[in-house]
Length: 281
Image (cartoon, rainbow, N blue to C red; front, side):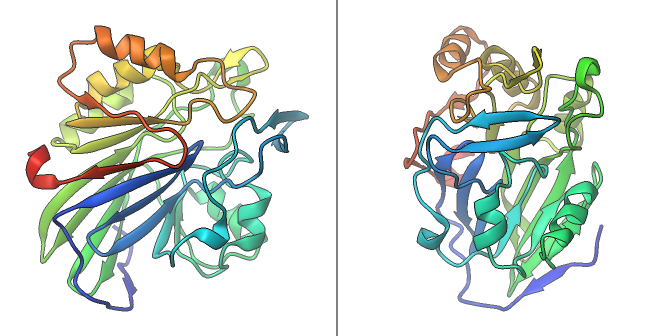
């Protein structure tokens, strides 16, 4: 575990209800237990292009639900990896340079080059605790595999994230974010090591680069939900860029045929999923 990050204390957090606001792609605003957390910030407008490296570009197909100026004050950012469709030029220019960003070592290096000073690097299973008065959230890096053999080494290292919210040492809610990943064997280690996931934000979309699928399709995302076994699953990252090949309809069809006990909740841009831990338990 890294040295805890202590934020200025404020009013005690509300653990009775939380929310996930879907901005677009993998960008969400999570508010729970006194914390306001942004994930994978991308705010390019519809029709603009993002550089993915190695001469590859993607066009944004859907307008984000808001812009950075519309956001409330942030406590931290959780970033799965530093790639143009997860941390874009708008984020690099407009986000506060001292905001804490929990991410991979590779991403921390690139963020530093962009002037960001709050990067905290995690390797798989490592944990970073953030404390705000008596409230805390611990972010643990989960295994993720983004680059299959045909494109090995062409994509940045990525991680999933497990967010454990609590107060006074008692865990109140466990939230899993898959990050950009394919189905792979190490996903089975997640429920063995960290059971009882309350909510999963699952990246789908079937992102395809150079003819190779590098994120889960809708059907694969449902299989991942079957593996990690959350109580509720919210698919994200499914239609924002021109490189996506597997939309939300495919995921819904697979979910309807699945034997998982997880409840699927579907969001479009600008919608909010509200959760109550007592109800989920």
